[in-house]
Length: 497
Image 1 (cartoon, one colour):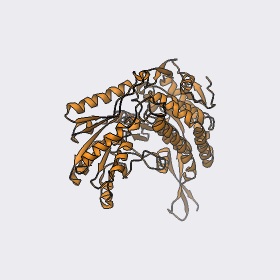
Image 2 (cartoon, rainbow, N blue to C red; image 1 turned 135 degrees about the vertical axis):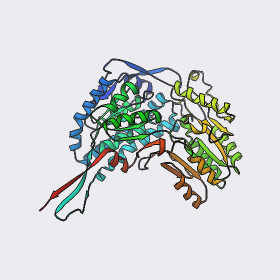
Image 3 (spheres, rainbow, N blue to C red; image 1 turned 45 degrees about the vertical axis):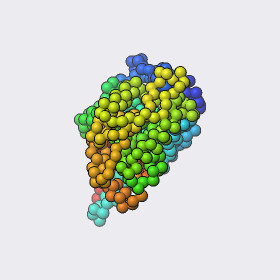
Image 4 (tube, rainbow, N blue to C red; image 1 turned 135 degrees about the horizontal axis):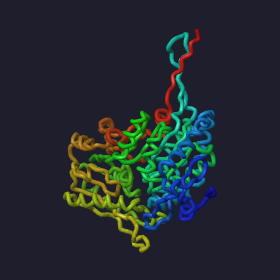
């Protein structure tokens, strides 16, 4: 079942080559049952590939391959592991255009504004964590002069990593790169909506690392994800996805008493003060709402609290900027906004738009649907900016995961801080002001794990990332994540008397 690792810039051809395959034990494998499921281009509705349908037998085989490889991988000097992981990053960088086109094809994310950027950060994550290898060090402890007391960091073993469809490349890298450097082997379960680009990534990094260290299966949660989490030889689970599924993962892992990292949902507040730089705040709202990702982001700034003194001007300028964005074919260089990932997600987004209208909020519909007839069956939805929203409204409280945001008018600072925190989520938040004292007060009071002032950066390697409340457990993207989530600390005492 070989697939060439030569650069392949035709995403349709590459999708066909990757059809019907898992990758574990250093090679492509068919599903044990022989079954598959379609991978659909959401811009046209056409089936572009078939993914292998993973089940418990596939999980058993992939975990066995990982377990067999992990012991020898852990014996390698840590700096050697780091160099190999960094080399994976360089291989991926050489293929980033190929990977970007493939992710645009299967997810509907625009190539220029989203997919190409994600493919670049993917390779950077491997280089970053590869360079952190020397930091896997222990400590000496001043316990007793007659005893040499020290700690060492050891890998946990086989890691099960379950990734989402919205940013699959980056979020996979932030899980597998630190796990690999720490001496673990990994089995990834891809999202059923986006199994191809991550499969190609695993194939490419297996040209550098030993067989079995990184493996990937495609499939659905109940048949593939659940057996992976429950497998007796999986000693750590890292999951990104919905709150509901995260709770199921957490319960299953608790039965085995293994550690879990969860990055779940968000309903992130963006507080714009009356003294804010209006142009800067508008740019921040567009970036923060991830309109170029169709709002399909856990950190999307979907609750925008704007001070009464600039509210109307803010809304008009935001509408003007979003109206200027072009919806179209994700593979077209002129496209700013692509598609929703699946029919199910499109239905969800449209249902929330209806809820907002029925609740009395005012929708401002922006941009324009593609005029190209071949995109007529595409999963497109225009960005919606709702005004006249109360923070208690469903569209302001529930995660929509689409290009829908609420602009909420405020006048009292204490009240807006309380409203910003009045949500079950706590992933990200931003505040926009020229007042340093106010900004410092807000960053300490906002209940979120990732807080920014006058900017709205996306997740980056070396910026500790993770939420509080229902947004998850643990941090990713940092040295802290590698040490705390992918190793355990062993204390050693040597009696020298």
